[in-house]
Image (tube, rainbow, N blue to C red; front, top):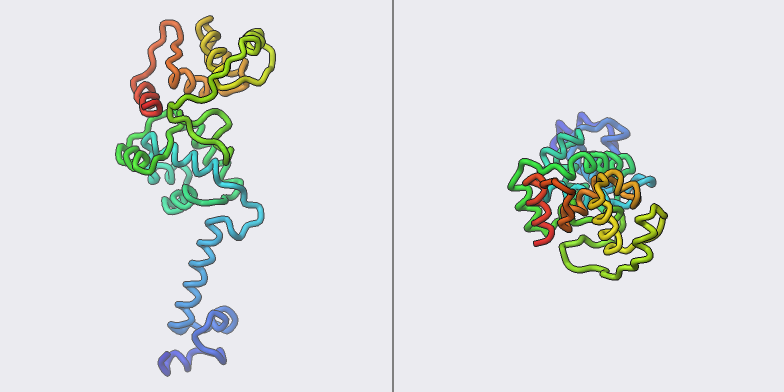
Length: 237
């Protein structure tokens, strides 16, 4: 520190964070240490290490990564969320986030997950990172840390026809993935809409639509939009 800086600094110990905060020291060393401390504080805060009300970020990470996988770039996601792109990238790898962040990302995901984004580079980057698209996640699996994406490999193939008949009759009953597919296929064949099938199975209409596309369950006289057929093919390829 030069003599000019020392003469302008009222602190007994020059060039420290304490001098900056308590004594108004604005010498070069004090400003540098203060700036470094604030950057470290913001990093810790962004990763949820300070706020005691932060929650697990598994669902937030998976939702953002899935949106990138269908063509929504981090720039577009940041614009939709009203935040800087860097914050979106932090959330995509964070262990914990604020509850309000998780809520906003979940709302954005519900709005965009079945709409292909315009960015081919985002899709390619997600593919290189092995990020699953929305159709690879079963309903309720996004927030489950122990759940894994369905890349088209066979899962539990057990089918209890009694459980299927109960579900078709409108009874509330636990079903395996295969049983759920069979119930959905039969209800669709009877002319029920995605909303009606979802109400019967306790799932959203978007989840039923994704299930139909993934497993080739077609509504009578209905042809899927080309964008959704391509997305379903990417999941099962």
